[in-house]
Image 1: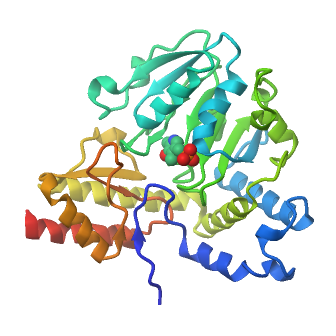
Image 2: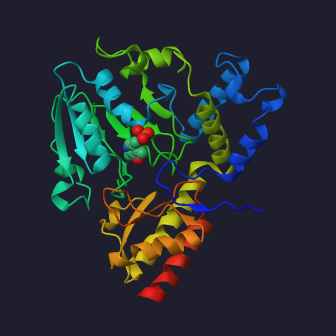
Image 3: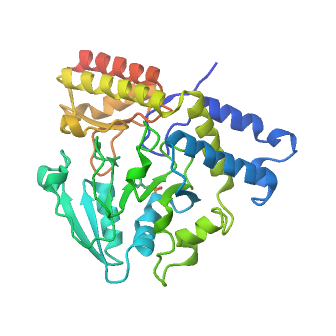
Length: 361
Ligand SMILES: *Cc1c(COP(=O)(O)O)cnc(C)c1O
């Protein structure tokens, strides 16, 4: 009998129960060697095996081409906001950034410390309810790269298209959308994702980088932040976050067992479709995002009367539907429907929302 709640947290987010159970079973004695995975040398054959299997499974899931390196790093996605310009933006250079919300703005602010940032397009003019199409972007001819945020975790906007930047490397913060469906990695110069949404626990960030972009770090870049150093050392220049790496590996195995990203994509498509359809048909709940730009993973919504918010959240908690409060900067509600959030969880949420509307509508 499971007592696990339905967890709609934006991050750190729900993990698959099967993965937690396996980690629990392996915790004291990892595969008969008498130690936990946290207590073994990262240079041991055992851990190197765990690490390389995780990488291979991620490569299989995303069909990552051979000319890309996969790095397992620390510092979260936020550290990448600095690490990317330190590696890819030459002194005095310009980078293009697309502003679609809070996470892209954080990336922009940090990059400004290292060079010229051209905000090539911004969703500000439409209150962050719609993503500017590429025809509306003003890219600079000499940009070192173009950075965008495919899924804005807080605002709930997501691109359903991949920008075309020609020979200029495309850099994407995929923290809250990676592994939600198949992806054509070859379109990108660099992809990064904090683990605590769809990959595993916090404390780990995955970077997928095209090999020709390695070795460009400026001389002031700390050794620990140089992608080439990480790549040359198999992400073990220093002690990596071994527990997180192992757990990410269990998630990748679980995703393969579910049928890979094609199958996950179908489930995820249905999950978000159901919830948006319900919200759009309701007179109590609403979501303001342009239909084509709605996020699959993070669905913010507001109640027509904010005075009902507290009662809504209390009723949800009583039904073990947790973490539905919106981000502190925007208020309202948000349901995050990452891979580990089952279709049954979404059905339970919709049933509760309907019941609450009936009583309070
Ligand atoms: C969560 C998130 C971040 C921040 O991740 P940290 O690992 O906490 O630094 C950055 N970008 C996006 C899109 C996110 O969803």
